[in-house]
Each structure stands twice: as structure tokens, then as C-alpha cells.
Image 1 (cartoon, rainbow, N blue to C red):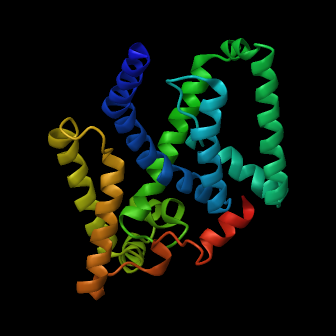
Image 2 (image 1 turned 45 degrees about the vertical axis):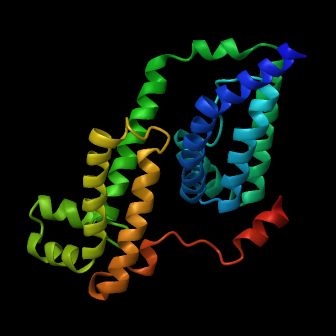
Length: 251
């Protein structure tokens, strides 16, 4: 009995010291990531939450691994978006995801995961590098608050090639937002400061979560006290008003 209580005490102490902080960090990173990936894929927001719940809770229980972290992967965003556009039906995409999950279960049952070693590492690194470049490039228009879909192919390209450069420079100024620039620059400065000074002192709070909260507050106060620099409605993530009702009904 004494050994049993000692084991429970050791487990609780270990949980409070290590697992609790890790779970908070994973939660703060996974929640906006799940929403962002579902939004980027063109899927409903509840789909990202369901994927995060299954990957974060159900999969670890089944796999019995104490170190695995599962959930939606940013690297599959472009693939999922292409499938949704090609099939023109979110239901067909859900069926494809279900079949892919069944295929993975079969691979696990028959111990066939080693076949992934035949995929050259250069292919994986090249795919992830290309996705990283695309993600960075896609964020630049948002940093200046540009609200048109042709930032790289029209405005910036014509400015750099001096093709009616002054005309497109004026158009870039008209379609940009001062509030977005202030929010982006201040968030970037806070990110640098947090990484250099506070990340080691407060390791259980990820910098990405802090920056999201800080950026949201900056955008809110700019719209409240400086309406001339307020962000447009299209520059916010639009969540349906009946989001919780839709999520509960779907689950």
C-alpha cells in the first residue's frame, strides 16, 4: 500500500512538473494551428478542431506513446486545398481523409511503416522548404494590410520592373492599411524581445500564442482609439456566429 501511494505521488509530481507545462504549450500552439490550417484549406473551422481533438487526445491513447504529438500538419494544407477545389465537395474530402486514416491503421497493424524510409529525405526537405517559402511570401501582403489578391503578380512586380511604377505605387498605398503595418511591426518587435529575454524564463508560454494575443489587442485598441488606422473587416478571421452550435451538431 505504501509503495502504491508513493508511485501515485511520484506520478502526480512528475505530471505537475513536466506534463502540465507541456500540455499547456501544445494546447496554445495547436488551437490556432488547427483553426489556421482548416481556414487555409478552405474547410470549415470545426473540421480543424475535430482533427486537433482526434490527433491530440484519441491518437495518443491508442498509440500508447508518451512522447508523440499528433494533429493537423501545415505541410498538407496545399494538398487538402487542392483536393477540396478539385472535388468541389467537402463531404468527398472527408471521405478521402477517412480512407487515408484507415490505410494508416492498416500500415500500423501490419508493421509496414518502415516503407517510408524509401522516400528520399531530399524530397521531404524540399517540400517543407517550399511550403515555408510560400507561407512567408503569403504573409507579406498581410503585413502591409494589402487587400487585393494580386500583390506579387501585379503591384510589387510592376513596381520593381518600373512598369508604370508610380501608378502602381499609388495603388499599393491606397490598398494598404496603416493599422496592419503598426500591428505587424509591433508584433515582430515583441517576438524578437520575447525570444531574447523571456522565452527561457517563461517556457510554458509559446511565443506564437503571446504574439497572437498581443496582435489582437493592438488591432482592437487601434480600431477603438484611432479609427483612421482601423483594420478592415476583411483583414480579420471571420468565425460564424453559430460556430459552437455547428461544431456540436457536427460532432
